[in-house]
Image (cartoon, rainbow, N blue to C red; front, side, top):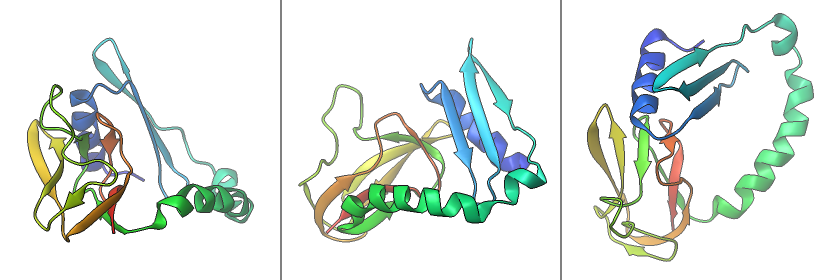
Length: 153
């Protein structure tokens, strides 16, 4: 189950974003849904029953091909992951061009994007030099810790 601190951090990031709905599902099958209505966040955590958790063997075969097919084209290059939960911003401001796009050449230490967490802007930098082969997050999207943001080849 999600800890109280994790939920609080998610609520802060969600409240700061323009998103109206966020659904998360962990490896145990537990789901957390946040819905933004009238400037307030509503947390909905449906109860998990034994029957919902019991059939992982039935869920894995149906989910595995989807996950494999969806991630297959993005496998090219080393992933750059989110160092924290927050709101992904591709550009320094709404009226500026994105830091990088697919095909951009980057050097180690170049800024790739910003992640806003608790009203602070955090730069995500390239850990290696190369070419951006995929941008895996959308501007304004809430990203999770460890979520792939870019791929660099």
